[in-house]
Image (tube, rainbow, N blue to C red; front, top):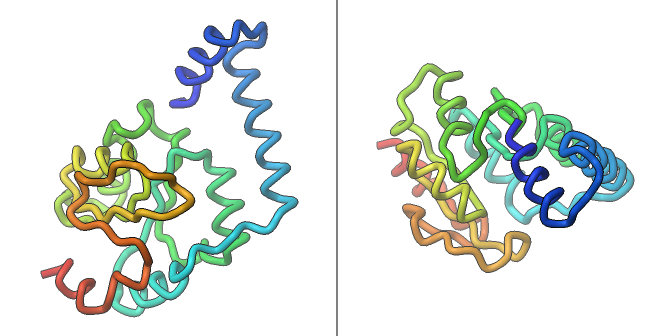
Amino acid sequence: MAAIPTWTKIKEDMQREETPEQLVAFHRDYFYQRFEQFEIPEVKGVKQLISRLKKQNVCLSVASSSSKELINIFTQKLDIQRYFDVMVSGNEVEKSKPNPDIFLKVAQWYGAAPEHFWVIEDSKHGVEAAKSAGMKCIGFANANSGNQDLSKADVIVREMDEITDFFIEQMYR
């Protein structure tokens, strides 16, 4: 599980008595309770983009460093879970982004070469992982992800509605 090395480092840095596994479990349980209690803000234009992509028969997936449980909470609360063919979590790969494993797992699931994929990413490590996997990448610079360096992306957008039908057609030429 990719989270263990991170929590091992936190345990050492903060001189915690708990095991990394206990810290992961505490963190997971705390955040799941918080997410289940509160409204998750919808990113403007995401549902419309997903709908347009599905109408054009584009296969959609989620490749998130988050746990499967957290992915499920988000996609269910936003009522978008049904649009995705596969959802791969950070728990399912050995190494986290910027390692490309999570994106390569998605490509493997579809049985397609990585160069046939476009990734929408809002983090520096995510962009690096997509590019390392040999995929094309749209960097999504938004307020929720901070001021991260997305310059390695093939293109950067600030709003989801910048990904127009024309752009989508060009993606698959």
